[in-house]
Length: 200
Image (cartoon, rainbow, N blue to C red; front, side, top):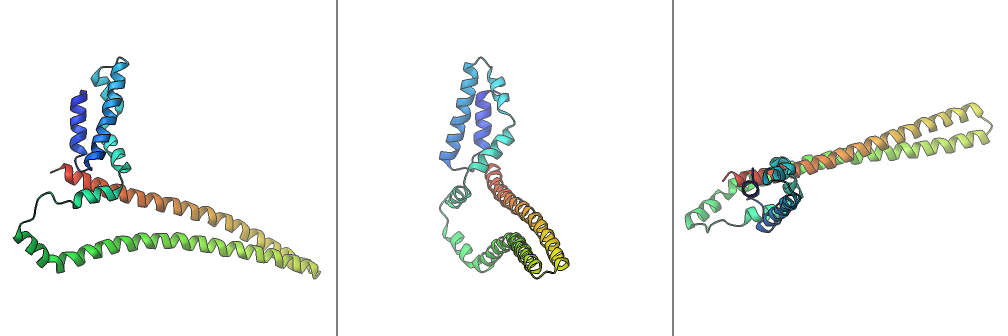
């Protein structure tokens, strides 16, 4: 694949992006190919050195804000005819609640996942507070000359401190993967918009 074929294929796959974003990406990859040509590579070698075009498209799409993609999709491609406007208005009691329901369900599921993560942090905080309370109790029992009870309290404080650390690590791991899930959902939605537009 030479430079022109590569840039044409890339432009076609990025057709759903706003024009400024698409042009910036094409100019960037054109410049990379030109730099490789100056270093003595052939056009085919320069294009091959860029890697798989699907990965390039995925990276570009991931970097474009979702708001820009949605804004471009919402721009009317043509002026609507009177009968189309009437159909949209008459159909709104059906499609509008369905659309809102779908958005609310997706948002609710994502919020519930974050609620689980926040609950894990709350459990971790409770374990930490319990460990501190047991430590204070062990000092009090030592002061009251009850060493057996004090040792039991100290052992409980150490166990709770260990559980606090474990739950903190677990909570951080869950938060990390929940954030990754959110990012993947966003990228998947953007890819869906781009591939739908590119297929037209």
